[in-house]
Length: 272
Image (cartoon, rainbow, N blue to C red; front, side, top):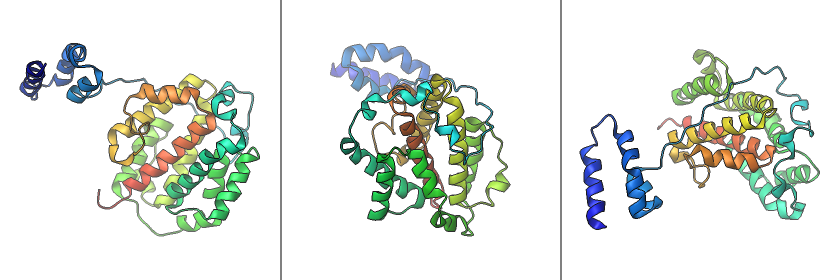
């Protein structure tokens, strides 16, 4: 076994300058996997690259501040996530509190006060949505004051915003206009536009799952330093697709909200 392992390493080293290295890895992957198992195979060759095709981005005609877009309880997407929905409020509480705490951290870069946690926990336990909590936090006076700061976004953030808008929102953002906004405004606007797109995609749940999977896998691949949890750092879009197909729609939205805010905070650092 040791000889075979050494042979594989030599072959990989020999092929390191080949333009077809990825193709070569896939050619020998089956042999390595059969000898050493999938875990060692992935360590030697890296995880097998899997890609999904992004669905067509729909045209959005709904006002971002309208509650109508996320209040339709009759859509199929609203009925999934039964494993979480069947829990009692007491059983859900630790997840809801964790969401509120992380939401504050990534939106405002600060921890919530205990009173705020209690307030929004009550909202959720009385049937309010995670998206509604997010909007309440980013449309209040505190967040408005953050948006009033005269700060120029870092180039990494403005570049990401333009590329993200074109690929995932079907929108063309002018880079010079983006650079006139600060971090806080960019985060809110891009997240609002994203939630709009997700609501329309949700009319065909498979399109939403695929959009989320491609988005999540790309962020995990391009920005590995940002993600600490196992599923967020997973580069295989199939994992994200499977998660999205089982999670409540509000959880798909809240994960997207948190990922966008967390990444944009990271990209706005001057020392990147």
